[in-house]
Image 1 (cartoon, rainbow, N blue to C red):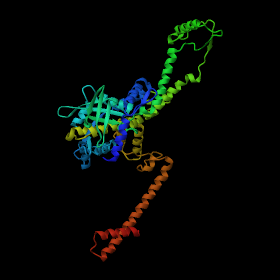
Image 2 (image 1 turned 180 degrees about the vertical axis):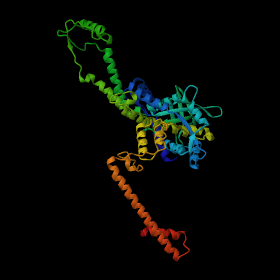
Image 3 (image 1 turned 90 degrees about the vertical axis):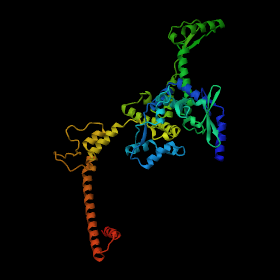
Length: 503
């Protein structure tokens, strides 16, 4: 593969063996081991991070999947793209060509349809192994992608070499082996002191590409490591406030000083009688000393705002709105529904696309010629009901659809009064029926009359123009026909054009 491959292999091999650089309590490393472990620890100890990743992984895992196959009337291009999924030389091109918008268009045009007989690849994807459902498999993979930017699936085969099980494995246990000729020659799975080599065909590797390492991935958590530290410290401060706090809070002043024995006795007495949540607000009696009350400052309470700030940073890193994790600040029905649509469209769907591309470009090829369709997901984006109602109503009012057609778009049954086949006919002032509805009537009422007049004038002008051109063309043909009885098609066309130009 030349000098470029050699340089890439050399650069990434050194990075794979680099030492992890630690950021506070978490980590940022090249090989992914420490990074994943620390990110998983943050996931288990940060409520906000748990809520965000949990919402995303559940959203992706609950999406329904289906297999689409060409219909009997599918064209050659459609059949070629689907057949390409079974051939290694064209599998990536075919998988990329069958994007979700393309598949939707193919289904709408009758080129593709849901499969009635499922392929072995889809059956395995639906039931990956005896202990994991498809939902659990996808959820685990997506957890790893969010925490480390990598999702690993190990393929287990039977004695014939046919894939029979799919198992998710932790990113920190997998290491790609760079290759001078093939970029990756295989993988190594480490289980304690045991290292298990795996072929390329034994692994399905999903990743969010890392700008620092072409062999590894990078997840959203790596971009907020410092903020995770800050949030963790704030939580510890709050915990220590209640655990170690000795209310009433303040300072004990001893003007005459205390001997070591008196200081030890006072300290022991204070801790036993006032330290801890259960001892708070008890009356204190001091000897040879006075209590100086300590008021809480802005710094003492700033951790509350700081934790909210950390929450917003986390939400921004993952690209979701607060309403999706139960934050009710400044939330109403409209922006909550909008947040749900945006979450599905820009968070769930792109992640489903990544999984779909990996399944079609990797799992499908493992079954060879048995591949007859494409595995895809059903778009989970909620319908914008308000927009659909507006479009259906407007289409009816401008005369594009009948009453029943508009009701069907809204999910309503046909009209019971028998008027479903009628187009919209507006009523003029006084109850008289106006002429059939035109497009201009959908606009503001003060513009309707002038626009209708302009439409009529334009229609009359074009009618006069066409009639004049027709008459000139006919006269020209008559003249030519008299002079030459052997006119051919080209001569007639030239005559018609000449008439149009003269008109």
